[in-house]
Structures are given as structure tokens and as C-alpha cells.
Length: 533
Image (cartoon, rainbow, N blue to C red; front, side, top):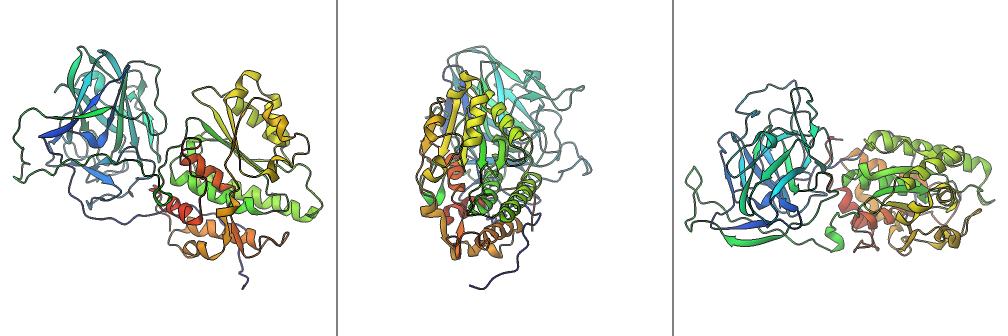
């Protein structure tokens, strides 16, 4: 094989621009529709389940799903289908104001009063009346696409106006109301008072164009907060009031609403449904096998592609605390430096990682790495567990568990794919790790599908996105490392298979036998905010 002159690392980022296809604006039929049912004080509404859309002359909501993507201009950002709940999401288009410097035109791209444009109506049924706090799952890319209004039964109460978020570049939940004094929004002020049991209508209207809307959750419990894609809706299909099909203002019949598709379990169209909780990565890479160089690069790409950056709370490498004689001192030091820079580039360029305190070199920062992982363990609870990816020897994990609060350890999950890691500890045996009371997940040797010939990654070598090319370069660097001969001619991101399993469902149906094909699909499904070329 011809050797390539490669830089060790380059400061690049990951992104992908899916192709656009023509699609009509989202306009459901009105003779049959979905009714969302409140259960135990939780009312869940998928954005695409609306019964009607009114006031669409200057702006309208458009449905994005895996089959159709509207060709509406201007729309400066890319589709964000990866990680979406249900069958798709709605976006307020066209989008002419993305930054504060763009011209604000009231009644065209900004609607300070509710009910002025893009008014969606949802049929719901409530059995437990009372005050419901409103959570919206959204994707905001700029400074001027982060607000909307919520109404009830054709009214727009003050408590439902000016929903606001500051969360960016990922699907996220928020429940805040913008005020004159607090432009970033105030918690617990965004709610609807539903005073009677029975059927009601919930309304959503635009405040800023470009807003991307995936799901509503209304909760009686003020302290409730949805996570990930949120709870599943309870719905039934009924005839809507009246039996005559309405027509659009232009006089054309409205297209029937598309029923939500079932989650696809095939490896070529994997759903993104990570479990509740946070993620910690403990990798080696300083031991003889260089596979963690490519694996960490792929992990950064997977988290970025699926909008799960906020879940990563710990990242450490070089966790082989006593490297064996099969790697020389000079090569081991070189690997540490490569991994130091790899992690720094990933954190800086694939971020933000708002819950990550940088990355740790376990050889030079062992105590800091242990303490950071200990703190993540101590923040764990039944509703917010910690998932530790064991991508190397278990000793750092063992030291962190030993230093953690005993009552927190039961909320820790450790994911492993190979006994070569489990049984390689210099200070802790695998049995001692499990004796801390953690939950073990053995998903099978990921080398079977993810240590391959180079050719399955050829798609990435000259990909138009430079972040994908960056990942290819890291895999190629590891292949050419030459400390061990068994990686020659192979691209190996096997440890990334554990993160892929976690992203696709973990212990509830996560995919255990990923190949480069599945990894490629997920990486190239990213709807990132940076147009990276």
C-alpha cells in the first residue's frame, strides 16, 4: 500500500449538507386528525400532529422529514433531522432574519404579538385540569430564531407568550418566558391554566422566523423536565368537528396529514434514542494498540452529528497507567501528545461541550482525571445516571469509583466490548470494578465490524466536508503508526461502537454490530449549523 504524507492532526470540524428536495408546506386535512391525550399530568404533542394552520400569507410552517424537505428560500441553515422526535419537525419559513444585524420587519419576520402568523392548532384531551408548564423541543441556530407564542382555546394568555431559549445548535428543551428585564427568559413563567377536563385546543404561533419546532410537553409538575426526545405521545384518531374538507386560501385542497412513522430498527436507518443520563469516555491509546486515535475522532463526530454534545461530561485518554514493554518510552510519549491534541481539537471544534471540563491525560493528570470522573459519578441519580465507556484499562474508573459516594455507584453503567480492557488493570480487577455495585454492559467485540480494510472508509477521504476528511486522517494516522503490525492495512474505530450502541438505544435495543456503513450514515445525517467545507 502506498504511504501517504499526513499531518498528525488538523484543526477541522464535522458537518454535512443533506440534499434538498421540493415539498409542499405542511397542511393537514381537517376531516380526520389526531387528538393528544394527557396521562398522569403529562401532555405530549408532536409538532407534526397539528389539526390546522392559519395565517400563512407571509410565513408558514413547513414539515421536514426523511422523505421530504421543503425547497423554501431563503433558508440559510441545513435540515436537522438527526435526533428528531416522531416523524419530523416544523420550521417557520422563509427565514430572512438570522442575526441581530439583519433587518427586523414587524409582521414579516418578527411577530411580537401572538396569533399574527403561522398559527398551528392541536386537539388535546385533558383528564387532570390545572396549571401546565410548557416545554418546547427546538433547534435554534442563530440569535433571532429562538422565540414563539403558546395559546389555549383561541386565547393567548400572557403566561403563554414570548417563549424564549438561549440553547443553540442541538435539539433541546426549554420552558422560559422572555421579559423586559430578562431577555434570556424566566423559569416557571411559561404555562397554561387548563381549568376544565375534556377536549381543548393548544395553539402555537410564530414569534421569529427560522424557528425549528419538534415537540411540546405540558406538565402539571413544575419541576418536571423532559430529556432527549422526550416522552412518547398518547394519541387517538378521531373525526374533527364538521365533515367538509376546508380549502386553503388559494382554493387548493389541503394534503392529508402524514401519520407518524414507526421508529426504524434497521442498521441502515438507525434511530437516535440514547438512554437517560450522561456520558463519560475513558480511553487508552497510549498502549500498543493505536485504535483509540481513530475511535475518539469518530466519537466526536457521532456526538456532534446526533446533537448529543451536552451529554458528554468526562473525557480522558492514556488510561494505561503502566504501559507494557511492547511500546517504547518515546512512542508512548508521542501517543500522549497526539491524543492531547486530538482531544483538544475535538473539544474546541466540535463543541460546545458545556458540561465538559476539558480533557484529561491520565498519565500526566491522573489525579485530576480521577477527581473529574468521581464528581460525575457523585452527580448521578436514578433519573440522571452516568454511562462510562470503558475504552481502555479499568484502573482510572476503579480509582474514581473508590473515591465516590457509595450511594451513587448504583446509578453508574459501565459499557465494555472486550476482555482485553476488562482484564488489563494494574490496580483493579474487573471483578473489583463490578463489586462497587455498578451495572455492567458487555456488548460484544466491536472489532468484528469496525476493524476493517481501508476501502470501506474511502467515501470519507475526499468528502466535501472537511470534518469527515479530518476523521479519515486520524484513522489513517493510526493505521500508519507502526508500533503494532496488526493494524497495518486496517482502519479501526472499534471503541466508537460502544458510543454508537449508546446513541441507538443502549440496553433498550441499541445496535451492537455496527459497521463503517452504519457509522457513515449517522455521520452524514448531521444537520450541523456550521457550513464546514
